[in-house]
Image (cartoon, rainbow, N blue to C red; front, side):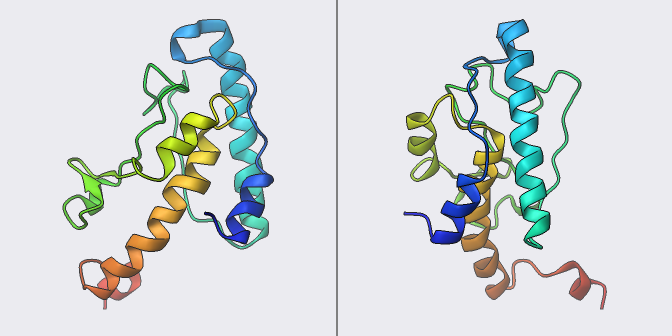
Length: 147
């Protein structure tokens, strides 16, 4: 169950309507517009809450890191810099979302998009894993690395 802050953040992300993936040409353009609007709203809300914590990049088609079966299949999230540092990660730095996030995603297709993946998948994973990795001395803040 998500905490109150997470529920509030997710409730402010627009739900998507178009059930289309990269193979659906014209419908994909509509889905992509909805994705961008949801991401922009999520980023704006995070900035207003002084919680600006991620950067995303896209290719021209909006398909970078998107499975061809999207949105039926949730995208994978990879953090190559953390590969091999936690058991909750697969080869190549892909984070484990199988137990908690993917069933939630499956129940909410096509309403969930990338902003929901960030808010309900990556964000909670980082909140649990990063403090543990720091406590174990496996990672440290960039400012501490240079000293």
